[in-house]
Image (cartoon, rainbow, N blue to C red):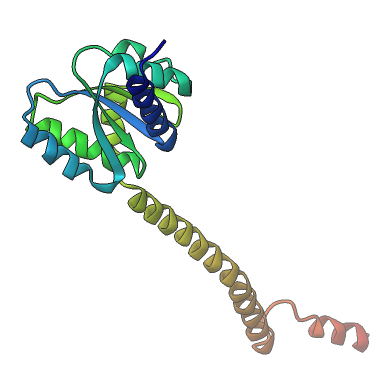
Amino acid sequence: MARPDKAAAVAEITELFRGSNAAVLTEYRGLTVKQVKTLRRSLGDNAQYAVVKNTLTKIAANEVGITELDDLFAGPTAVAFVTGDPVESAKALRDFAKENPALVIKGGVLDGKALSADEIKKLADLESREVLLAKLAGALKAKQSQAAALFQALPSKLVRTVDALRDKVEQGGAGTPAPAAEETAAE
């Protein structure tokens, strides 16, 4: 029978997995307590960074349905449970790992899909959600402007064509059948 304290720890980790939209597994061997505190602060409110026991975390992940990470639960493991923007958290972890090579990103999970360490680094290279939304809004606005210009050009072109025909007719230009009608009337 499992000890109550271990069962409570598994339940807590299970809730962290369920409440987060991403989780990044790291190895923190060689980091000082001060460096771990700095990492937690750099993650901010977007993520909760927790040092975990491999066996208990593996059980909790399996309870949630995440079995792809089983091989990553080896050595000293800490998990960043991301509740905010996963891109921002991945960037914070990547930047911290650049400054502190002792932090190793092992892999993770995003919306139920397992990610390798390289995929997490690619995620960190993405622009933030706000920037991507701004670019999308700009692209949509540009397309709307192009459509408005096109719709405005059609009536404008029609008016210019009608004006050109009217000027041509007023100047006695081509297309006036009057001289031919006079010749038939004179015969």
